[in-house]
Length: 355
Ligand code: PLP
Ligand code: COI
Image 1 (cartoon, helix red, strand yellow):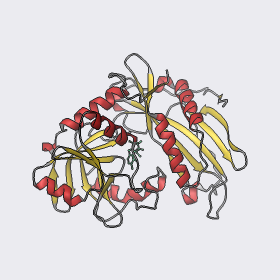
Image 2 (image 1 turned 60 degrees about the vertical axis):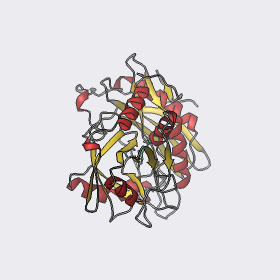
Image 3 (image 1 turned 45 degrees about the vertical axis):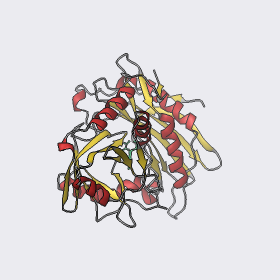
Image 4 (image 1 turned 180 degrees about the vertical axis):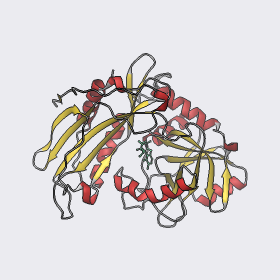
């Protein structure tokens, strides 16, 4: 596919102090766009200056939330290369989300080529400091101006990029999380496994209440029995109980995280037993009381590997590993970021170099 490139005439100043990047507030000079029209397919792949979109007020995304997105990162190595971590998995998952939201599939190769071109154009925006990266947000929105409820006939596929630091202000320090017993995120048969805005809009109320109580996020339970552990707002969850690593299985209500999948592969290659299964929250509490809850950590692109130091369920407060990062979480973090930043060899063939 031919990608047209229109460069900005007014480049923005780049952030001077990379230690203050935060997450998701600064955007690069360009974006990738492609249109879809029924009968014509996806067309007009282009890289254009980053700018506001012009949308019809009746655009279906604004009314019925028909949209999907992805989250991935580009990393600068100390040799000056720029590389992506398993990007083909993100575009594959985008198409899984598309299918669930009745959005036409994209060509995953075209998306990856478009992304690489965009990163080349905006390469100076990939930050240098340890712990920073270029967060990449591909997304698709329904643009058909129509008020009846049906799938749109027109879409925009867009990729924007944002230089970022840590997602949680705690960085690698353990986060505080509580088990949500009032609200639910998803149920099997719903959209829990898809990366679509509605899942996050639905989670805001619980997240807001957690923030008010000085918690980072909530740990969701299954929406039917309110008994089994699901995931956290922006990450999958792992428990180390009595030497074994356990994480919720993919039954349709949680996001199949790429960091989750990669962590399982790494842990197994190190000889750990990893169980993917339903985990009653009662089992976690019992393990804690028996002194066998050794580590709890979340995995995600934005969150990387995020230790949980304090987990509250009703009246029970579980202080995990003295509120310090545990050895398995630390090893996973070191290995994962080592591969991502090109410090360690890419033993699993996960890296795609852009430059
Ligand atoms: N779960 C949710 C709800 C998420 O938003 C994310 C972030 O993308 C994850 C899990 C982790 O997925 P990944 O490792 O692919 O970033
Ligand atoms: C990610 O980890 O990429 C996410 O999408 C999490 C969040 C920023 C929504």
